[in-house]
Length: 318
Image 1 (cartoon, rainbow, N blue to C red):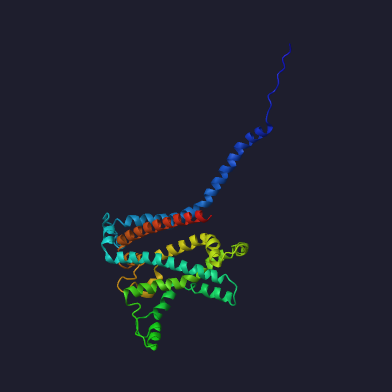
Image 2: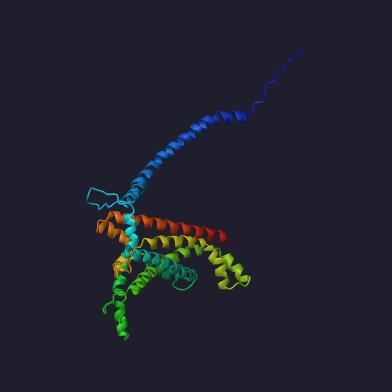
């Protein structure tokens, strides 16, 4: 009886893939090394411009470093305790938060209706769009100086001169604490409404016109179309705009400083102004660093809360 031996079936495709696997692994490894090499300059810039300064700031916040003397003494949490016991710093923190929240709400409430109006067809629409956009193009410091002349508490100020010609008494716009805070917030809203309206306008132009036509056929009013079509489509723009407004409002410095110089008293003083004055002008790097650390933590908390709110809003209307 003859025995016949049969060779086992060989999957040629599987064998070929197995033969190529080591070579493929070597190629991926080489690509990974090449990618890492190209990322080294970015990593170096991150370490030099961000990571190292942050670590130094945290370290200096626990010392009495003055920037001039080479001797650095460890003081623990004394700088942080001083911050919460300093009325001027607390006033600056309060005004910064008030400014950020108020401008965000006011600009959003004005920019969306303005964008809806600018999205309609009317004579001079292009000129109107350009006018509202270029209002916020100049630097905040220049805008602050211009409005400083307009809101001057003297009778020679532009607005007070106009009031006097009408037989009305002059108003101490920048000499009163409450009025000065109002002026700073008003100028910030005036300068940024047009820019953010342009942002919303870009999203409005991406909404298909068929949605509005179908809604009109179904008998929906303009108000119903706005709340059921326009607003859900503007949720991504709302998230971007509010993020820019919150972050910009928290780090406000140039507009308030140019308009009021932080006064009267500490009414319009901001956290960034305090950091610069304490750290650079008064050479108290320890206190300035502690203030910067607390301000960074507060900004992170606010931004994280805003991201969560934007995510929840996006999920709701998606």
